[in-house]
Image 1 (cartoon, rainbow, N blue to C red):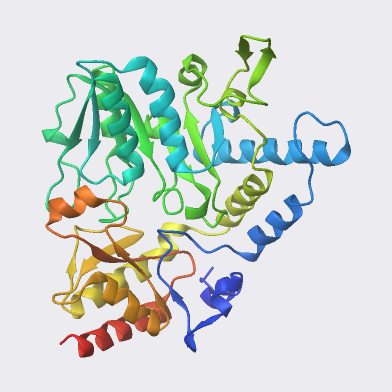
Image 2 (image 1 turned 180 degrees about the vertical axis):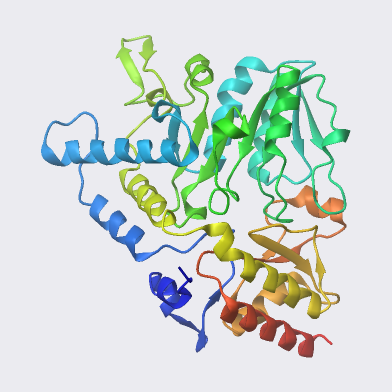
Length: 394
């Protein structure tokens, strides 16, 4: 069936708005994807629910069913089991959970954590912190000039954990996760994958990938902010201590000691984010209605063409989702500001990937990114904006 992009755009209320009197071309989905009406309505319905798990009245039981139903849907989406799905506030919290629990228990002097030069700060700073605390060493795997991980240059020998982004939020390159898992496991190391940029654009099967942990955020995949997932192999989660204490995660509490529930409850202290989790479930249902990679491919290629036509330098060799670029003599913040005046929403800065920009010899870049609602009209509007920017900065 042919893609009816106009009908899909109508599912997103934000796209009905104008910006400075112009049609909105939203090219910042890598930061936060817009939310379709189905997700907004699910969030509103969940706002009427009670507190899950401990209540026996109807609204409490409905809240429990909502959370656990969403957990099952997430597990089905990524090919895991429901008891391996931990709800968090986002990919950042998910990665910090592993660093502060598994890392604190398993890292020490002489051990190595391997990340890469591509990493978002959320998959770099937590490892800096725990390695400094535990006396372990953090090594960054190098990348080539196309922005791909130079896997044959990584020394895995002393690694305890490899932490890699599935898709770079700057170069748009896809990491060879299955091969990284094979090489990490060959030396007894674990593999954590930051899936924030992959989850909305690629099919994810944690079993096929061979990873040990997978983290992602709902707001990258048409869901609400403040909601995320950590998937971990059951035997790893069972061996990990709690990160935070409080209600919900305890089995028994005495005056001076407590015992803890089995995962995933062990890692979900406090009242669950019922509203956000319901929004995530609705986002998954929405994403089942289309093929993201196929639907987005033409728009992604069009953005690359438009940037090259304007004389821009593209960072790396983007494969999907994002295209980061630099225009000679134009600061990225000026690009973003002037583009906004043309109704084009894009991102500027180092995109929480400062070491990568340093590796590429830049302080910052501009970035466009696609969603399921991105089409030829958005590409044309972006190309027009670039042409006008070039008129200002010839």
